Length: 301
Length: 264
Image 1: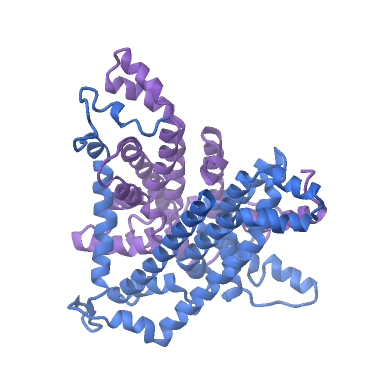
Image 2: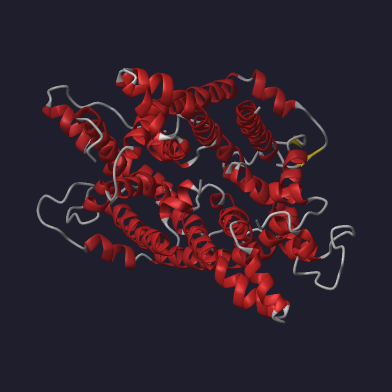
């Protein structure tokens, strides 16, 4: 009811046809925010893209000129290839585990009755708002040599294991940080689901498993898909978790960019890796939009 | 919770333990009387909290983070209210672009924003400036505010405003007495979520803070990569406490599920 009312827009009460002319009111209203975003999003991204083509002189630290060597070394240098591959592997694994844990959990949550439903939704989602440094630190204590997990392993007779600074730990901590991003979209699509449809399947003699696989799963698939893409994108650019739990040797893309910028001071190389990361993220997000839109178009048409 | 079977409830319990374990252990270890990271088996002690309050770097970073979060959330709301009105109520050339631009920090990795801002600050000579840090945080919290405001403004009955106009109210009066009160839950909810996001932000800030503007998450990250003692646990427990207060407030004024899950 509030959409499509441009002719009664309050900023132009004396103007008969505000939408025919170029409207000035929205420009004034959005101007300050647009200036901020032009200055602090578009300009710095443009400068960084330019920087990634600059040459870098290790002796003097100067940058300038034009070169493709940074992009070339990302696709040819073993060091970078390994880091990109590791980042992909860890993110894919974290995403898969988030699906396996997050989807059933969202389904279980949606079948609860209040107040339990609200309480546990809060329990699952609220850690999202606690600083990621705190959560990484919590995992380093849980999995540390003197931590309770190793204590339990010793008590079980398995013995102490080196858990910190391994890929496994990074994956576990990433799953902890990303799980809410999987639960949220799946929960949202479960909310749109009519429980009567599942009931109908059951009353026609379908088993619970059949009802879930044939009736519920297809309808929440877009939610699972969108959750997976968000989790993958965020995992691939995660910084604090590999930084604190991966140690010096287990580098991921984000920690390498950090090293390039703040230890090696090779800004052009860091910029090239950052540009690739940004491009990969945008491709993932745009694919997601296209898929979701395609899905709705098919359902509507 | 009658509709879930025992297997489902067991699974659910494991997930809840998984989600809470790292936060719980931090809060427990914060009260240890020992010198090492260990669970407080021989009574509770507040010595590590005292150590935090007597650590000038952490105290300074706390105030940096607090001011940064208050300023950037407030300024972001001040910019986002008119901007959300513009993109929801008017059809104008470039509207789609502006809308995408305002929400873009949600899909640009903070790492990329961090290195991009570092470059910009180096070019304009703003490295280490607190004002520019505030502006950078405004960029990353504005999308959260805009999402809530756009939802509030689109679900808004315009006839109330029209009634006010027809009774002779001026634009300023209509905005102050009608529009603003109706979108107020979106404004306060947006401010709180912006505050939390700014207060917690690490990945972008680590590139653009200077020794005098280091924020609490950045200080903790630096500290944790060098030494680990129970003081880290005490700082973390304090942060969890502050976050919980903000979360409960947010739940009161807006509804946490509405903010996180969205309205569908």
